Amino acid sequence: MRHKTKTELNNMKQLITFSILVLLVISFSSCEQEALQPSIKYTNLNDMKASQSQSFSLDIDGDGDTEFLFTTLLVADQSGDKRQFIISPARANQVFEIAGGVGVLKAGQEIALGNPFNKNLEPMVVKSITDASVTWSGDWKDVNNKFIGIRFRLADQEYYYGWIRVSFDQSNEQFIIHDFAYCTTLNLGIKAGPK
Image (cartoon, rainbow, N blue to C red; front, top):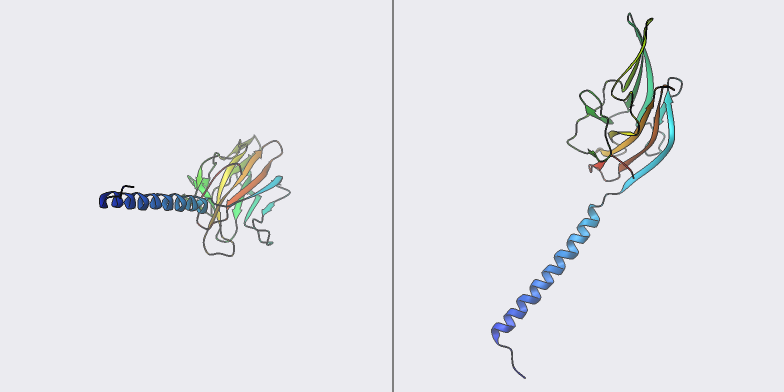
């Protein structure tokens, strides 16, 4: 039986040490990936409606407090009547803003810290009624199954990020609120889209 030389022993120790380090890195990174998998809370709203005759209050955590309200306002001036279809965030809650309005987001768009959010936005849809005509305007007037990016606070002082999937039905003059989801980890973003 041949004895191993000092060099061979050192090489074996280095190989064993390297193998252990590789195994530790692999196990640590798999744990880290599991920890980075955010928990998403999804709720199907079964196509709730919001119209002139019926507002819809979205209570995200079921505590009886409204986080977001879908409703209409009637504004009259010398040019005629305007029915405004809006989303109204409660308290410090906000919606994703694009050019002063409620952003129309597609599936896959990131909703996170660093995006523009605001509380006081232009109406999503406006129906203008004059003696001569009825016209529709607003970024959401022809929308079907698009997303509103939201950020909101519950009992915490930090924000949760989520989305609400909405359509607008001009013929029945109503929002259809399909579902919503949010990341249950504070300050962690979410992509708009299916659960």
